[in-house]
Every structure is written in C-alpha cells, then in structure tokens.
Length: 263
Picture 1 (tube, rainbow, N blue to C red):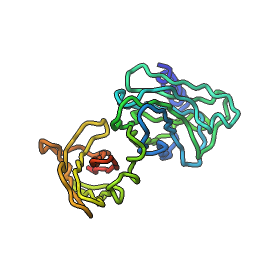
Picture 2 (cartoon, helix red, strand yellow):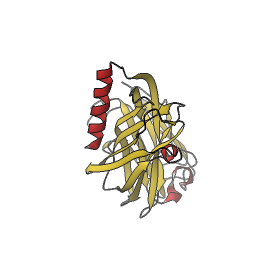
Picture 3 (cartoon, rainbow, N blue to C red):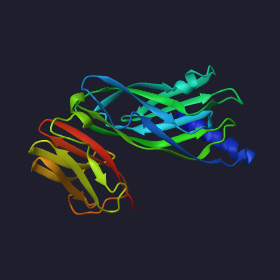
Picture 4 (cartoon, helix red, strand yellow):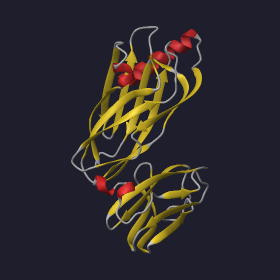
C-alpha cells in the first residue's frame, strides 16, 4: 500500500539523518461531529486541523460500518487545494470498511499552514442506524518532512435517520441527552427531559457499534428522567476505557451523545 511506503520511507530518512520526530501535540477532529443524515443521501466528513502549524504530509486510516454507509471517495482538503502547491494525493480502500487517505506536498521547503481542512471523505447512506467513525492511524509531517510525534484524531458517528429526528428536533424530547460527569470513572448519570410520557430505550454502544448495555427500555414519565451506567456490560463485565455512544430512542425519534470512560 502506498501509505506504508510513504511512512516507511519518511521514517527511514529521519533515522538516517538522525532527526527525531517533531515534539508537538497535535489534535485533529472530524467535522461535522456526530452528524445526522437522511437515508438515501450523501454527505461529507472533513478532517480538520485547529492548530497553527505547518504541514507537508497527512496520512489517515479510518474505519466505518459498511452496512450503514458506503464510500464515494476522498481527497486533499481545502488547505492543499487553495494553496496552489502541487500535492500528490490518494485514497485507497483495500479492506472493506477501512479507508486510507493521504496528501503529500512534493516540493521541498513548502507546506500548508493550519488551521483548516486537511482531508475529506464523501459517503452515501445505505440503511438507518449508527456507525462509529474511528481513526486507526493519523500521521502528519512538518515542512521538513519530520513527523509530529503526538497526533490524535478522535472518533465521531454518522447517524442515518430522518433529519427531523435529530437531537434538537426530536418531538417529545425537550433537551439534549446529558452525561454527568463526562468524562467519568466508572459511573455516569444520563439525563434528559420528555414533554410527554411514552416508550423510550436508552442503550450504550462501543466505538465499533456493538451494543454494550441497555440501561432502560420501557415507559418513562413526562419531565426529567435519568439512568446511570457503571461501566459494565450486559453480563456484568467491566468495560475498557474509551469513547461510548449513548443512544436514546423514543416512539417518535432518536438522539445520541458520546461519553468517555476513563481507566
């Protein structure tokens, strides 16, 4: 895979030159976060850089649920395309449900500068549901081709549903789902408000979309309602630290939020 060749070549050059990776912490993010999109439609997720740093290479590996969405393509972001600098870009999906995108400025001594869009991924929806979007790898290098030592790209979700049932527009739900505290270890309280009594289901999923625990399934009264999660799955086993999705379904819509279990 070209990504592996690029990374290995760059690392080899760094080692030969005796240059250590750039000592800087860089945080990337998906935009929009936790997006809700209608069935039988298309959308775009961008990988954004908020730091004011120089970038010559970006390389990411991302996984998703192929039963919920399908890839259309990907490419270098606006920072590259608006710069006027020649960029070698690629998008590969050799493994089902996992894509690799990269963009490399070929001229020595040139770079793009954040903040802004580094890369984009276009997709189309296949079925209603929730798919976590998880970064398995995120690498960027500076103007000299040296790799930043600490680069992170947090996960997000794509919720395929009628947009009218998104978090702020779910009939019967007066406010967003709230976690208190968040992050938490090991217990958190999940709170929401209903404008009328009715059936609700509150479920916890891990970042791969697997159901971890059902916290409540049945009727709930109008007004404030809360449940707690102690970090255990349906079999009473403690779950590892990480990001979890809390999904609330009512008879008229669905909403979701993320929480971080610290270990």
